[in-house]
Image (cartoon, rainbow, N blue to C red; front, side, top):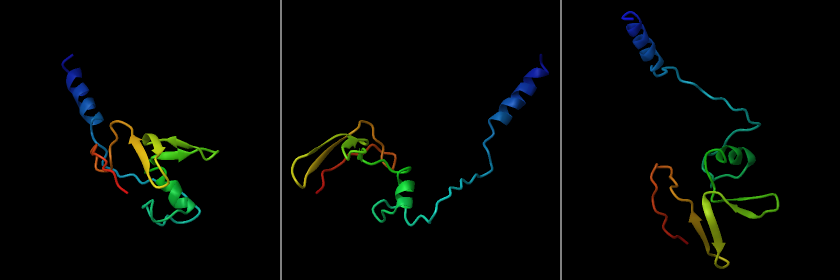
Length: 104
């Protein structure tokens, strides 16, 4: 039994080793990605990549009806003002929950 304990510990430490090799993911597109800023471009490749990175407030279905995503609800107060109520415990790019201030 004493000989198995050290072997077990060796297996345990080997299995806990963090990988040292870096991995690269290659994704093929017909064209080149121009920007990761969702406000800079709206061509299909940028939109495709950004949709896997950023979560929008709402989405449109096939009938162009608005459905909540990051927002749990939204309402249009007038022609210029929308109110979005966000889901609970939403984390922003910094990792903070943060408070959203109204803006116009």
